[in-house]
Image (cartoon, rainbow, N blue to C red; front, side):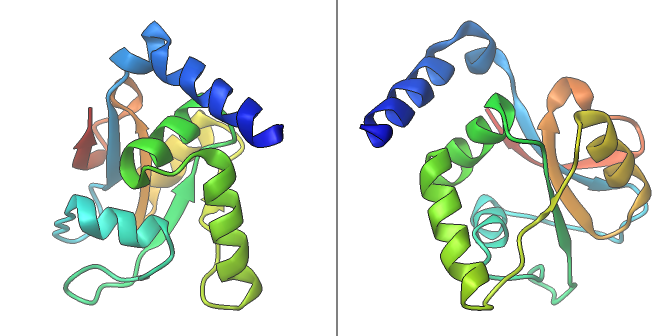
Length: 140
């Protein structure tokens, strides 16, 4: 029953006009060194399969608070709904294979972290990106 409800809510979020118009982007600080990030690399990072970029640079990740933007990001990047992400990540953390991303309390906090912290990668709606950030990947 819970799964059916979660699927229904995910469908509502995806079909809402705001969700379909918001472009999500993966960003880092302008203070980071040269960073290239493919969709596949971003997926591996956010699924905890790697903690480094292709050149070996270690990175940390930031998550937005629970909500529609976060859910939309994971669905677009990994094709997993919120309950699947929680279950998947819980298994990895429990076995010690990864640590979860830092969770910002607000979009404003995530923006501040992403602007100020080199080698921190996160996601935002395109409208929330500042000049102190570099866009690495677009998720339409």
